[in-house]
Amino acid sequence: MKLLKIKKSKIDNKRRGRNAAKDIKEGTKIINYVGKIITNKQVEESDKYDNDRPIYLFTLNKRYTLDGDFPWNTAGLVNHSCDPNSQYDGKGLKIWITAIKDIKKGDEFTCDYGFGFDENYKQFPCKCRSKNCCGYIVREESRWRIHKRFAMSNKKINK
Image (cartoon, rainbow, N blue to C red; front, top):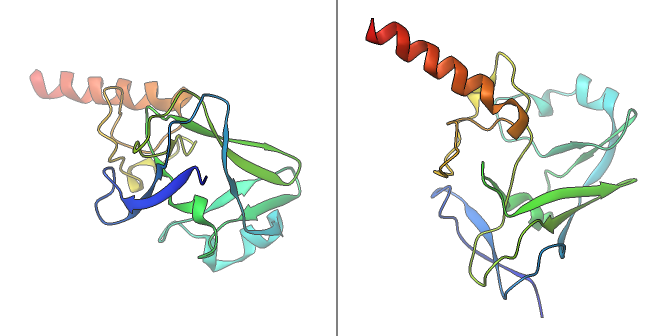
C-alpha cells in the first residue's frame, strides 16, 4: 500500500500537499526525493536558481546538488513546518523523507526546509501556524535570531 496521497494542503492553500495514506511509524522512509544531479557550479551560474521562484535544491556534498524541480518529483510537494513530522535524510546521492515521529492517517507530511538565516529571510514567510513558528522559513537552530529580533522591535515600539 502506498504511504502517501495528494490532497490540498492545510499549510499552503494555494498548493497541494502530501498526506499519509495510512498510519506511519517513526523511522519509516516515506518517499525518495528525486531529481537531476548537477554540479554546485551549475547552481551558481544558472538564473534558474534565484530566489524569485520556488527552489527545490539539496546540496549533496562539496561538488554536487540535487535539483528536484521536476513534475515527477512528488516529494517536492512536502511543505515546510516549524514543527515537522518528517525530515530529509540522505546518504551519498539519495535523499529520503523519513518520519521523525508517528504520523496518523490523513496528516500532512511536513519537513523543516532548513533555510539559513541571512539578509533574505523575510523573502520566505512561513504559513505553518505551529506554536513555535517564527513567521519565516528558517532552520530550527537559527529561529532564535528572529525571535530575538522580534522581541527587540517590540521593545522599541513600547517605549
